Image (cartoon, rainbow, N blue to C red; front, side, top):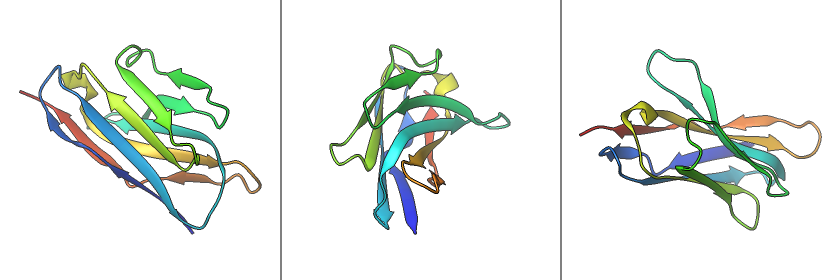
Length: 118
């Protein structure tokens, strides 16, 4: 069984920074895309950023230029550096990873809360 565990959330003032981490544990699998999503209170879950095994990166328009996604060399951990945080970035942040081989299982972490407030 594979588990994704996020960490690094917390309370930060507007303009501040946080770094989220997501590490896989349990059974050893290879991941293709690893992604971050977020869900604000009363809102739908939305895509934030993704990084493929080959290093291709995508960002939501709302975070471009402020957030940076990266991945460790082993390919089983993903990070999200969030700079210039705004109140609208307040949300629960979830890690997601797509298994590279069959059955291409999609895994989710339990989430970590990010609150941007003065």
